Image (cartoon, rainbow, N blue to C red; front, side, top):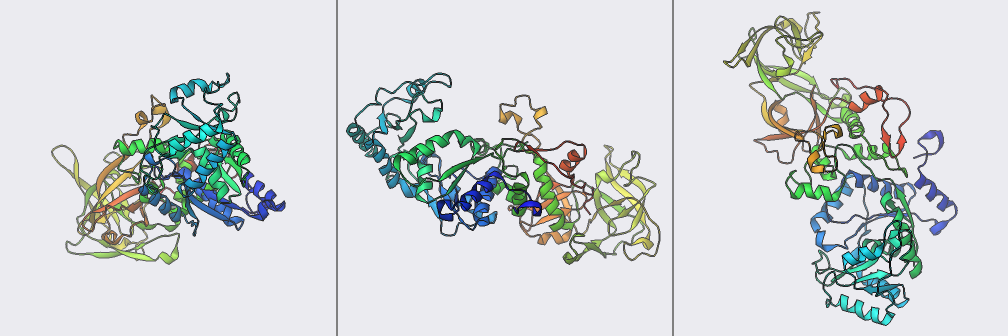
Length: 581
Protein backbone atom coordinates (compact mmCIF):
# COMPACT_ATOMS: atom_id res chain seq x y z
CA UNK A 1 0.00 0.00 0.00
CA UNK A 2 2.89 2.31 -0.58
CA UNK A 3 2.75 5.45 -2.68
CA UNK A 4 4.02 6.05 -6.20
CA UNK A 5 6.14 3.56 -8.05
CA UNK A 6 7.04 1.73 -4.84
CA UNK A 7 3.75 -0.16 -4.93
CA UNK A 8 0.08 -0.09 -5.91
CA UNK A 9 -1.80 3.20 -5.83
CA UNK A 10 -4.04 4.11 -2.93
CA UNK A 11 -7.65 3.04 -3.02
CA UNK A 12 -10.33 5.66 -2.52
CA UNK A 13 -10.81 4.82 1.17
CA UNK A 14 -7.13 5.30 1.88
CA UNK A 15 -7.31 8.64 0.08
CA UNK A 16 -10.21 9.75 2.29
CA UNK A 17 -8.42 8.69 5.46
CA UNK A 18 -5.17 10.39 4.48
CA UNK A 19 -7.03 13.63 3.69
CA UNK A 20 -8.69 13.41 7.12
CA UNK A 21 -5.33 12.91 8.78
CA UNK A 22 -3.85 15.90 6.96
CA UNK A 23 -6.77 18.04 8.18
CA UNK A 24 -6.53 16.60 11.72
CA UNK A 25 -10.12 15.42 11.50
CA UNK A 26 -11.11 13.29 14.52
CA UNK A 27 -7.96 14.61 16.24
CA UNK A 28 -5.85 12.52 13.87
CA UNK A 29 -7.47 9.25 14.94
CA UNK A 30 -8.34 6.29 12.71
CA UNK A 31 -10.80 3.92 14.34
CA UNK A 32 -12.66 1.30 12.29
CA UNK A 33 -14.85 -1.66 13.19
CA UNK A 34 -15.95 -5.01 11.83
CA UNK A 35 -19.63 -5.47 12.78
CA UNK A 36 -21.00 -8.93 11.81
CA UNK A 37 -24.41 -10.20 12.82
CA UNK A 38 -24.02 -13.52 14.70
CA UNK A 39 -26.66 -15.32 12.65
CA UNK A 40 -24.36 -17.59 10.63
CA UNK A 41 -20.76 -18.30 9.77
CA UNK A 42 -18.60 -15.75 7.96
CA UNK A 43 -17.79 -16.24 4.27
CA UNK A 44 -15.05 -15.08 1.91
CA UNK A 45 -16.92 -11.79 1.35
CA UNK A 46 -16.58 -11.03 5.05
CA UNK A 47 -12.87 -11.81 4.75
CA UNK A 48 -12.55 -8.86 2.37
CA UNK A 49 -14.18 -6.59 4.96
CA UNK A 50 -12.07 -8.02 7.78
CA UNK A 51 -8.85 -7.44 5.84
CA UNK A 52 -9.97 -3.93 4.91
CA UNK A 53 -11.07 -2.74 8.35
CA UNK A 54 -8.29 -4.32 10.39
CA UNK A 55 -5.75 -3.58 7.65
CA UNK A 56 -6.57 0.13 7.58
CA UNK A 57 -6.28 0.32 11.37
CA UNK A 58 -2.86 -1.33 11.20
CA UNK A 59 -1.65 0.85 8.33
CA UNK A 60 -2.62 4.12 9.97
CA UNK A 61 -1.69 3.09 13.53
CA UNK A 62 -5.30 3.14 14.60
CA UNK A 63 -7.68 0.67 16.16
CA UNK A 64 -10.34 -1.72 14.90
CA UNK A 65 -13.20 -3.04 17.02
CA UNK A 66 -14.98 -6.35 16.68
CA UNK A 67 -18.66 -5.68 17.29
CA UNK A 68 -21.50 -8.16 17.11
CA UNK A 69 -24.73 -6.70 15.75
CA UNK A 70 -26.94 -8.87 17.96
CA UNK A 71 -30.25 -7.03 17.52
CA UNK A 72 -32.28 -9.94 16.11
CA UNK A 73 -32.29 -12.66 18.80
CA UNK A 74 -34.53 -15.05 16.86
CA UNK A 75 -31.67 -15.85 14.43
CA UNK A 76 -28.56 -15.43 16.59
CA UNK A 77 -26.53 -17.88 18.62
CA UNK A 78 -23.31 -18.10 20.63
CA UNK A 79 -22.10 -20.75 18.16
CA UNK A 80 -21.89 -18.04 15.53
CA UNK A 81 -20.19 -15.62 17.94
CA UNK A 82 -17.49 -18.19 18.64
CA UNK A 83 -17.00 -19.09 14.97
CA UNK A 84 -16.66 -15.42 13.98
CA UNK A 85 -13.93 -14.85 16.56
CA UNK A 86 -12.10 -17.98 15.38
CA UNK A 87 -12.26 -16.81 11.77
CA UNK A 88 -10.96 -13.31 12.47
CA UNK A 89 -8.06 -14.68 14.50
CA UNK A 90 -7.27 -17.33 11.87
CA UNK A 91 -7.04 -14.61 9.22
CA UNK A 92 -4.34 -13.01 11.33
CA UNK A 93 -6.14 -10.17 13.11
CA UNK A 94 -6.96 -9.32 16.72
CA UNK A 95 -9.20 -6.81 18.42
CA UNK A 96 -7.28 -6.80 21.74
CA UNK A 97 -9.78 -5.71 24.41
CA UNK A 98 -12.18 -4.12 21.93
CA UNK A 99 -14.88 -6.76 21.58
CA UNK A 100 -18.32 -5.23 21.80
CA UNK A 101 -21.95 -6.14 21.21
CA UNK A 102 -24.86 -3.96 20.16
CA UNK A 103 -26.58 -5.48 23.19
CA UNK A 104 -23.98 -3.70 25.36
CA UNK A 105 -25.80 -0.51 24.37
CA UNK A 106 -29.45 -1.59 24.68
CA UNK A 107 -30.10 0.78 27.60
CA UNK A 108 -28.45 3.71 25.81
CA UNK A 109 -30.18 2.93 22.52
CA UNK A 110 -33.51 2.88 24.33
CA UNK A 111 -32.73 6.24 25.89
CA UNK A 112 -31.82 7.65 22.47
CA UNK A 113 -35.18 6.45 21.14
CA UNK A 114 -36.95 8.18 24.04
CA UNK A 115 -35.00 11.36 23.23
CA UNK A 116 -36.21 11.24 19.62
CA UNK A 117 -39.80 10.78 20.81
CA UNK A 118 -39.53 13.76 23.17
CA UNK A 119 -38.15 15.90 20.36
CA UNK A 120 -41.05 14.98 18.07
CA UNK A 121 -38.80 12.93 15.78
CA UNK A 122 -40.30 9.47 16.43
CA UNK A 123 -43.76 8.03 17.01
CA UNK A 124 -45.46 4.75 17.82
CA UNK A 125 -47.33 3.37 14.81
CA UNK A 126 -50.09 0.73 14.84
CA UNK A 127 -50.03 -0.09 11.12
CA UNK A 128 -49.37 -3.77 10.47
CA UNK A 129 -46.68 -4.85 8.03
CA UNK A 130 -49.04 -5.08 5.07
CA UNK A 131 -50.58 -1.65 5.68
CA UNK A 132 -47.15 -0.14 6.23
CA UNK A 133 -46.04 -1.38 2.81
CA UNK A 134 -49.12 0.14 1.22
CA UNK A 135 -48.60 3.49 2.96
CA UNK A 136 -44.92 3.53 2.02
CA UNK A 137 -45.55 4.32 -1.65
CA UNK A 138 -43.35 3.36 -4.57
CA UNK A 139 -40.20 4.57 -6.25
CA UNK A 140 -42.32 6.87 -8.41
CA UNK A 141 -45.12 7.74 -5.95
CA UNK A 142 -44.76 9.34 -2.50
CA UNK A 143 -45.94 7.52 0.58
CA UNK A 144 -48.84 8.48 2.84
CA UNK A 145 -48.54 9.58 6.43
CA UNK A 146 -49.52 7.05 9.04
CA UNK A 147 -52.74 7.99 10.88
CA UNK A 148 -50.67 7.80 14.08
CA UNK A 149 -47.89 10.10 12.89
CA UNK A 150 -49.10 13.21 14.73
CA UNK A 151 -49.58 11.70 18.16
CA UNK A 152 -48.32 13.90 20.97
CA UNK A 153 -44.90 12.98 22.40
CA UNK A 154 -46.50 12.15 25.76
CA UNK A 155 -48.76 9.53 24.19
CA UNK A 156 -45.89 8.07 22.20
CA UNK A 157 -43.76 7.84 25.34
CA UNK A 158 -46.54 5.95 27.12
CA UNK A 159 -47.05 3.53 24.24
CA UNK A 160 -43.32 2.95 23.89
CA UNK A 161 -43.08 2.22 27.60
CA UNK A 162 -45.90 -0.33 27.23
CA UNK A 163 -43.98 -1.93 24.34
CA UNK A 164 -40.91 -2.17 26.56
CA UNK A 165 -42.93 -3.62 29.45
CA UNK A 166 -44.14 -6.51 27.28
CA UNK A 167 -47.77 -5.41 27.16
CA UNK A 168 -47.89 -5.26 23.35
CA UNK A 169 -47.97 -8.29 21.05
CA UNK A 170 -45.41 -8.77 18.30
CA UNK A 171 -46.32 -6.96 15.09
CA UNK A 172 -48.92 -4.71 16.70
CA UNK A 173 -46.85 -1.59 17.41
CA UNK A 174 -43.56 -0.25 16.05
CA UNK A 175 -41.56 2.85 16.77
CA UNK A 176 -40.89 4.83 13.60
CA UNK A 177 -38.61 7.77 12.88
CA UNK A 178 -40.56 10.83 11.72
CA UNK A 179 -38.73 12.00 8.61
CA UNK A 180 -40.44 12.44 5.22
CA UNK A 181 -42.99 10.12 3.59
CA UNK A 182 -42.44 11.89 0.26
CA UNK A 183 -38.67 11.47 0.23
CA UNK A 184 -37.27 9.97 -3.00
CA UNK A 185 -35.11 7.81 -0.73
CA UNK A 186 -37.37 5.01 0.51
CA UNK A 187 -35.18 4.56 3.59
CA UNK A 188 -36.27 8.00 4.83
CA UNK A 189 -40.00 7.31 4.63
CA UNK A 190 -40.51 7.04 8.37
CA UNK A 191 -38.47 3.85 8.86
CA UNK A 192 -39.09 1.51 11.77
CA UNK A 193 -36.40 1.92 14.42
CA UNK A 194 -37.82 -0.39 17.14
CA UNK A 195 -40.07 -3.44 17.04
CA UNK A 196 -41.58 -5.84 19.56
CA UNK A 197 -39.84 -9.21 19.50
CA UNK A 198 -40.43 -11.62 22.36
CA UNK A 199 -37.45 -13.86 21.77
CA UNK A 200 -34.78 -15.07 24.18
CA UNK A 201 -31.51 -13.21 23.59
CA UNK A 202 -28.24 -15.16 23.79
CA UNK A 203 -26.72 -12.48 26.06
CA UNK A 204 -29.51 -10.49 27.70
CA UNK A 205 -31.93 -13.38 28.15
CA UNK A 206 -35.53 -12.16 28.51
CA UNK A 207 -34.68 -8.70 29.81
CA UNK A 208 -35.85 -7.05 26.60
CA UNK A 209 -38.86 -7.61 24.40
CA UNK A 210 -38.20 -4.64 22.12
CA UNK A 211 -35.15 -4.53 19.87
CA UNK A 212 -33.65 -1.75 17.74
CA UNK A 213 -33.46 -2.14 13.97
CA UNK A 214 -30.04 -2.40 12.38
CA UNK A 215 -30.12 1.11 10.86
CA UNK A 216 -30.80 2.61 14.28
CA UNK A 217 -28.35 0.50 16.30
CA UNK A 218 -25.52 0.55 13.76
CA UNK A 219 -24.81 4.28 13.58
CA UNK A 220 -25.31 4.85 17.30
CA UNK A 221 -23.02 1.93 18.18
CA UNK A 222 -20.40 3.47 15.89
CA UNK A 223 -20.87 6.77 17.68
CA UNK A 224 -20.66 5.29 21.18
CA UNK A 225 -17.41 3.52 20.30
CA UNK A 226 -15.81 6.62 18.82
CA UNK A 227 -15.52 5.10 15.35
CA UNK A 228 -14.09 7.55 12.80
CA UNK A 229 -14.64 5.68 9.53
CA UNK A 230 -17.66 3.38 9.32
CA UNK A 231 -16.89 1.23 6.28
CA UNK A 232 -19.83 -0.66 4.78
CA UNK A 233 -20.60 -2.53 1.59
CA UNK A 234 -22.27 -0.74 -1.28
CA UNK A 235 -25.83 -1.86 -0.53
CA UNK A 236 -25.80 0.50 2.47
CA UNK A 237 -25.14 3.58 0.34
CA UNK A 238 -28.84 4.49 0.26
CA UNK A 239 -29.00 3.98 4.02
CA UNK A 240 -26.32 6.61 4.67
CA UNK A 241 -28.82 9.54 4.77
CA UNK A 242 -30.68 7.71 7.57
CA UNK A 243 -27.38 7.00 9.35
CA UNK A 244 -26.60 10.73 9.18
CA UNK A 245 -30.13 11.84 10.14
CA UNK A 246 -30.18 9.82 13.36
CA UNK A 247 -26.79 11.04 14.52
CA UNK A 248 -27.55 14.66 13.62
CA UNK A 249 -30.92 14.69 15.38
CA UNK A 250 -29.32 13.34 18.55
CA UNK A 251 -26.28 15.60 18.31
CA UNK A 252 -23.77 12.82 19.06
CA UNK A 253 -20.34 11.92 17.66
CA UNK A 254 -20.74 11.45 13.92
CA UNK A 255 -18.50 8.92 12.13
CA UNK A 256 -18.24 9.02 8.35
CA UNK A 257 -19.90 6.12 6.57
CA UNK A 258 -18.00 4.99 3.46
CA UNK A 259 -19.23 2.28 1.08
CA UNK A 260 -17.22 -0.12 -1.05
CA UNK A 261 -18.15 -2.90 -3.47
CA UNK A 262 -18.77 -6.26 -1.83
CA UNK A 263 -17.08 -9.41 -3.07
CA UNK A 264 -19.03 -11.55 -5.52
CA UNK A 265 -17.55 -14.84 -6.72
CA UNK A 266 -18.61 -17.13 -9.55
CA UNK A 267 -19.69 -20.74 -8.98
CA UNK A 268 -20.77 -20.22 -5.37
CA UNK A 269 -23.31 -18.32 -3.24
CA UNK A 270 -22.45 -15.28 -1.16
CA UNK A 271 -25.68 -14.86 0.80
CA UNK A 272 -25.79 -15.88 4.44
CA UNK A 273 -29.49 -16.68 4.03
CA UNK A 274 -28.75 -19.06 1.16
CA UNK A 275 -25.83 -20.62 3.00
CA UNK A 276 -28.09 -21.24 5.98
CA UNK A 277 -30.61 -22.87 3.64
CA UNK A 278 -27.92 -25.20 2.29
CA UNK A 279 -26.99 -26.24 5.83
CA UNK A 280 -30.49 -26.61 7.23
CA UNK A 281 -31.78 -28.56 4.23
CA UNK A 282 -28.80 -30.93 4.26
CA UNK A 283 -27.37 -30.02 0.87
CA UNK A 284 -23.97 -29.75 2.57
CA UNK A 285 -22.46 -31.26 5.71
CA UNK A 286 -22.51 -28.13 7.84
CA UNK A 287 -21.22 -24.57 7.79
CA UNK A 288 -17.63 -25.82 7.48
CA UNK A 289 -18.30 -28.14 4.56
CA UNK A 290 -15.29 -27.66 2.26
CA UNK A 291 -17.61 -26.80 -0.64
CA UNK A 292 -18.93 -23.78 1.24
CA UNK A 293 -17.43 -20.29 0.72
CA UNK A 294 -17.41 -19.86 4.50
CA UNK A 295 -14.05 -19.06 6.05
CA UNK A 296 -14.33 -22.18 8.20
CA UNK A 297 -15.17 -24.26 5.13
CA UNK A 298 -12.18 -22.90 3.24
CA UNK A 299 -9.94 -23.49 6.26
CA UNK A 300 -11.12 -27.10 6.49
CA UNK A 301 -10.61 -27.56 2.76
CA UNK A 302 -7.00 -26.43 3.11
CA UNK A 303 -6.99 -22.78 2.07
CA UNK A 304 -4.37 -20.73 3.86
CA UNK A 305 -5.06 -17.47 5.64
CA UNK A 306 -2.19 -15.80 3.80
CA UNK A 307 -3.63 -16.81 0.42
CA UNK A 308 -7.01 -15.34 1.32
CA UNK A 309 -5.37 -12.11 2.48
CA UNK A 310 -3.36 -11.96 -0.74
CA UNK A 311 -6.51 -12.55 -2.78
CA UNK A 312 -8.29 -9.68 -1.00
CA UNK A 313 -5.30 -7.47 -1.73
CA UNK A 314 -5.22 -8.56 -5.37
CA UNK A 315 -8.86 -7.75 -6.14
CA UNK A 316 -8.59 -4.33 -4.51
CA UNK A 317 -11.21 -1.91 -3.18
CA UNK A 318 -13.57 -0.11 -5.55
CA UNK A 319 -16.95 1.63 -5.65
CA UNK A 320 -18.25 -0.52 -8.49
CA UNK A 321 -19.94 -3.89 -8.20
CA UNK A 322 -18.50 -6.73 -10.21
CA UNK A 323 -17.96 -10.47 -10.10
CA UNK A 324 -14.62 -12.16 -9.58
CA UNK A 325 -13.82 -15.48 -11.22
CA UNK A 326 -13.33 -18.26 -8.68
CA UNK A 327 -10.33 -19.27 -10.76
CA UNK A 328 -8.52 -16.09 -9.67
CA UNK A 329 -8.84 -17.10 -6.03
CA UNK A 330 -7.60 -20.57 -6.94
CA UNK A 331 -4.68 -19.10 -8.86
CA UNK A 332 -3.56 -17.06 -5.85
CA UNK A 333 -3.91 -20.11 -3.62
CA UNK A 334 -2.12 -22.39 -6.06
CA UNK A 335 0.82 -19.98 -6.31
CA UNK A 336 1.33 -20.13 -2.55
CA UNK A 337 0.78 -23.87 -2.23
CA UNK A 338 3.39 -24.54 -4.87
CA UNK A 339 6.00 -22.95 -2.61
CA UNK A 340 4.91 -24.37 0.77
CA UNK A 341 3.22 -27.74 0.17
CA UNK A 342 5.27 -30.87 0.81
CA UNK A 343 5.23 -33.36 -2.06
CA UNK A 344 4.04 -36.92 -1.76
CA UNK A 345 2.87 -39.64 -4.12
CA UNK A 346 -0.67 -40.96 -4.03
CA UNK A 347 -2.65 -43.12 -6.45
CA UNK A 348 -6.31 -42.17 -6.69
CA UNK A 349 -7.49 -44.63 -9.35
CA UNK A 350 -5.24 -47.64 -8.79
CA UNK A 351 -4.26 -50.56 -10.95
CA UNK A 352 -1.58 -53.10 -10.02
CA UNK A 353 1.84 -52.84 -11.71
CA UNK A 354 4.05 -55.94 -11.40
CA UNK A 355 7.77 -55.75 -12.21
CA UNK A 356 8.42 -59.34 -13.27
CA UNK A 357 12.22 -59.26 -13.13
CA UNK A 358 12.43 -57.46 -9.78
CA UNK A 359 13.43 -59.67 -6.79
CA UNK A 360 10.37 -60.89 -4.90
CA UNK A 361 11.45 -59.93 -1.38
CA UNK A 362 13.56 -56.89 -2.18
CA UNK A 363 12.62 -53.46 -0.86
CA UNK A 364 14.61 -50.37 -1.76
CA UNK A 365 14.25 -46.90 -0.31
CA UNK A 366 14.03 -44.26 -3.01
CA UNK A 367 15.04 -40.68 -2.23
CA UNK A 368 12.27 -38.20 -3.06
CA UNK A 369 12.35 -34.39 -2.92
CA UNK A 370 9.91 -32.89 -0.44
CA UNK A 371 9.58 -29.55 -2.22
CA UNK A 372 11.75 -28.43 -5.14
CA UNK A 373 10.81 -24.82 -4.36
CA UNK A 374 12.24 -25.07 -0.84
CA UNK A 375 15.72 -26.63 -0.48
CA UNK A 376 15.36 -26.63 3.30
CA UNK A 377 12.39 -29.01 3.04
CA UNK A 378 14.87 -31.82 2.44
CA UNK A 379 14.10 -35.29 1.15
CA UNK A 380 12.15 -38.36 2.24
CA UNK A 381 12.64 -42.09 1.78
CA UNK A 382 9.91 -43.97 -0.13
CA UNK A 383 9.79 -47.80 -0.20
CA UNK A 384 9.95 -49.47 -3.62
CA UNK A 385 9.05 -53.12 -4.27
CA UNK A 386 8.06 -55.64 -6.91
CA UNK A 387 4.36 -54.75 -6.88
CA UNK A 388 3.23 -51.14 -7.14
CA UNK A 389 0.03 -49.20 -7.50
CA UNK A 390 -0.08 -46.76 -10.41
CA UNK A 391 -2.83 -44.55 -11.83
CA UNK A 392 -5.09 -46.42 -14.22
CA UNK A 393 -5.14 -43.33 -16.44
CA UNK A 394 -1.37 -43.59 -16.87
CA UNK A 395 -1.84 -46.66 -19.08
CA UNK A 396 -3.44 -46.77 -22.53
CA UNK A 397 -3.99 -49.85 -24.65
CA UNK A 398 -4.35 -47.65 -27.71
CA UNK A 399 -2.40 -44.52 -26.90
CA UNK A 400 -3.14 -41.18 -28.57
CA UNK A 401 -0.47 -39.27 -30.44
CA UNK A 402 2.40 -37.90 -28.34
CA UNK A 403 1.49 -40.27 -25.48
CA UNK A 404 4.33 -40.15 -22.94
CA UNK A 405 2.99 -42.49 -20.34
CA UNK A 406 2.63 -46.27 -20.29
CA UNK A 407 1.55 -48.65 -23.04
CA UNK A 408 2.64 -52.12 -24.09
CA UNK A 409 6.01 -52.03 -25.84
CA UNK A 410 6.95 -48.58 -24.56
CA UNK A 411 9.27 -47.33 -21.82
CA UNK A 412 8.54 -44.89 -19.02
CA UNK A 413 10.29 -43.82 -15.83
CA UNK A 414 8.87 -44.50 -12.40
CA UNK A 415 9.34 -41.21 -10.58
CA UNK A 416 12.41 -41.36 -8.28
CA UNK A 417 12.86 -44.98 -9.44
CA UNK A 418 13.73 -46.97 -12.53
CA UNK A 419 12.93 -46.96 -16.22
CA UNK A 420 10.53 -49.79 -16.98
CA UNK A 421 9.35 -51.45 -20.17
CA UNK A 422 5.71 -52.53 -20.33
CA UNK A 423 5.40 -56.12 -21.60
CA UNK A 424 1.76 -57.22 -21.25
CA UNK A 425 -1.51 -56.78 -19.37
CA UNK A 426 -4.03 -59.05 -17.63
CA UNK A 427 -7.80 -58.52 -17.79
CA UNK A 428 -10.73 -60.02 -15.90
CA UNK A 429 -13.78 -61.63 -17.51
CA UNK A 430 -15.40 -58.23 -17.96
CA UNK A 431 -12.42 -56.95 -19.93
CA UNK A 432 -11.16 -54.67 -17.14
CA UNK A 433 -7.39 -54.47 -16.73
CA UNK A 434 -6.37 -55.99 -13.39
CA UNK A 435 -2.60 -56.17 -13.81
CA UNK A 436 0.05 -54.43 -15.88
CA UNK A 437 3.35 -56.30 -16.24
CA UNK A 438 6.74 -54.82 -17.01
CA UNK A 439 10.47 -55.29 -16.62
CA UNK A 440 12.89 -52.81 -15.09
CA UNK A 441 16.33 -51.68 -16.10
CA UNK A 442 18.50 -51.99 -12.99
CA UNK A 443 21.05 -49.51 -14.37
CA UNK A 444 18.58 -46.63 -14.51
CA UNK A 445 17.82 -45.95 -10.87
CA UNK A 446 17.12 -42.26 -10.47
CA UNK A 447 20.14 -40.31 -9.22
CA UNK A 448 22.47 -43.30 -8.97
CA UNK A 449 22.05 -45.30 -12.20
CA UNK A 450 24.99 -45.82 -14.54
CA UNK A 451 22.92 -45.97 -17.71
CA UNK A 452 22.58 -42.90 -19.91
CA UNK A 453 19.23 -44.13 -21.14
CA UNK A 454 16.51 -41.49 -21.13
CA UNK A 455 12.75 -41.48 -21.64
CA UNK A 456 10.31 -38.59 -21.97
CA UNK A 457 7.54 -39.83 -19.70
CA UNK A 458 7.46 -40.26 -15.90
CA UNK A 459 4.63 -41.58 -13.72
CA UNK A 460 4.13 -41.77 -9.98
CA UNK A 461 3.49 -44.87 -7.89
CA UNK A 462 3.29 -46.31 -4.38
CA UNK A 463 4.47 -49.67 -3.13
CA UNK A 464 1.53 -52.06 -2.82
CA UNK A 465 3.03 -53.74 0.23
CA UNK A 466 3.64 -50.49 2.10
CA UNK A 467 0.98 -48.05 0.94
CA UNK A 468 -1.73 -46.79 3.27
CA UNK A 469 -5.35 -46.81 2.20
CA UNK A 470 -7.06 -43.44 2.36
CA UNK A 471 -10.37 -41.82 1.58
CA UNK A 472 -10.00 -38.86 -0.73
CA UNK A 473 -12.74 -36.29 -1.13
CA UNK A 474 -12.60 -34.56 -4.48
CA UNK A 475 -14.34 -31.22 -4.09
CA UNK A 476 -15.52 -29.19 -7.05
CA UNK A 477 -17.48 -25.95 -7.39
CA UNK A 478 -20.66 -25.65 -5.37
CA UNK A 479 -22.68 -24.42 -8.36
CA UNK A 480 -22.82 -25.55 -11.97
CA UNK A 481 -21.35 -23.45 -14.74
CA UNK A 482 -23.96 -20.70 -15.41
CA UNK A 483 -24.26 -21.89 -19.00
CA UNK A 484 -25.36 -25.30 -17.72
CA UNK A 485 -27.94 -23.93 -15.31
CA UNK A 486 -31.44 -23.71 -16.78
CA UNK A 487 -33.02 -21.71 -13.95
CA UNK A 488 -30.40 -19.18 -12.88
CA UNK A 489 -32.83 -17.55 -10.42
CA UNK A 490 -33.13 -20.74 -8.36
CA UNK A 491 -29.75 -21.35 -6.79
CA UNK A 492 -30.78 -24.77 -5.47
CA UNK A 493 -31.50 -25.85 -9.05
CA UNK A 494 -27.98 -24.73 -9.92
CA UNK A 495 -26.24 -26.90 -7.31
CA UNK A 496 -23.48 -28.96 -8.85
CA UNK A 497 -24.34 -32.67 -8.42
CA UNK A 498 -20.64 -33.46 -8.81
CA UNK A 499 -19.41 -31.02 -6.16
CA UNK A 500 -18.14 -33.97 -4.10
CA UNK A 501 -16.78 -37.32 -5.20
CA UNK A 502 -15.42 -39.77 -2.65
CA UNK A 503 -13.05 -42.58 -3.56
CA UNK A 504 -10.42 -44.85 -2.06
CA UNK A 505 -6.77 -44.17 -2.79
CA UNK A 506 -3.31 -45.37 -1.77
CA UNK A 507 -0.77 -42.99 -0.29
CA UNK A 508 2.86 -43.20 0.75
CA UNK A 509 3.28 -44.90 4.15
CA UNK A 510 4.75 -41.70 5.61
CA UNK A 511 1.37 -39.99 5.18
CA UNK A 512 0.12 -41.79 8.28
CA UNK A 513 1.90 -38.98 10.12
CA UNK A 514 0.44 -36.19 7.97
CA UNK A 515 -0.08 -32.97 9.89
CA UNK A 516 -3.66 -31.76 10.13
CA UNK A 517 -4.14 -28.47 8.34
CA UNK A 518 -0.90 -28.74 6.38
CA UNK A 519 -1.07 -28.74 2.57
CA UNK A 520 0.41 -31.56 0.52
CA UNK A 521 0.85 -31.86 -3.19
CA UNK A 522 -0.11 -35.31 -4.42
CA UNK A 523 2.38 -35.29 -7.30
CA UNK A 524 0.86 -34.96 -10.76
CA UNK A 525 -2.63 -34.87 -9.20
CA UNK A 526 -3.68 -31.98 -6.93
CA UNK A 527 -3.16 -30.32 -3.55
CA UNK A 528 -4.70 -32.05 -0.53
CA UNK A 529 -4.95 -31.66 3.22
CA UNK A 530 -5.90 -34.00 6.05
CA UNK A 531 -9.55 -33.61 7.05
CA UNK A 532 -10.64 -33.22 10.67
CA UNK A 533 -12.55 -36.53 10.42
CA UNK A 534 -9.35 -38.41 9.69
CA UNK A 535 -8.37 -41.14 12.15
CA UNK A 536 -5.19 -43.18 12.59
CA UNK A 537 -6.95 -46.20 11.08
CA UNK A 538 -8.74 -44.20 8.37
CA UNK A 539 -6.93 -41.37 6.65
CA UNK A 540 -9.21 -38.79 5.02
CA UNK A 541 -7.88 -36.15 2.64
CA UNK A 542 -9.64 -33.18 1.10
CA UNK A 543 -8.68 -31.91 -2.32
CA UNK A 544 -7.84 -28.24 -1.91
CA UNK A 545 -7.36 -27.30 -5.54
CA UNK A 546 -6.18 -28.95 -8.74
CA UNK A 547 -2.77 -28.36 -10.27
CA UNK A 548 -4.21 -26.85 -13.42
CA UNK A 549 -4.28 -23.06 -13.34
CA UNK A 550 -7.38 -22.17 -15.32
CA UNK A 551 -7.06 -18.47 -14.50
CA UNK A 552 -3.64 -18.23 -16.11
CA UNK A 553 -4.97 -20.15 -19.09
CA UNK A 554 -7.79 -17.62 -19.53
CA UNK A 555 -5.31 -14.78 -19.25
CA UNK A 556 -3.18 -16.34 -21.93
CA UNK A 557 -6.17 -16.45 -24.24
CA UNK A 558 -6.62 -12.71 -23.69
CA UNK A 559 -9.68 -12.77 -21.44
CA UNK A 560 -9.10 -10.37 -18.57
CA UNK A 561 -10.90 -10.92 -15.30
CA UNK A 562 -13.40 -8.36 -14.10
CA UNK A 563 -12.78 -7.21 -10.57
CA UNK A 564 -15.00 -4.74 -8.83
CA UNK A 565 -15.89 -2.99 -12.08
CA UNK A 566 -12.26 -2.72 -13.14
CA UNK A 567 -10.17 -4.71 -15.57
CA UNK A 568 -7.03 -6.24 -14.18
CA UNK A 569 -4.19 -4.95 -16.31
CA UNK A 570 -0.52 -5.66 -16.58
CA UNK A 571 1.55 -8.72 -17.40
CA UNK A 572 -0.03 -12.10 -17.71
CA UNK A 573 0.65 -14.60 -15.01
CA UNK A 574 3.21 -17.20 -15.96
CA UNK A 575 1.74 -20.54 -16.85
CA UNK A 576 2.57 -23.02 -14.17
CA UNK A 577 4.13 -26.33 -15.04
CA UNK A 578 1.58 -29.03 -15.59
CA UNK A 579 3.28 -31.24 -13.06
CA UNK A 580 4.01 -28.46 -10.56
CA UNK A 581 7.48 -29.90 -10.03
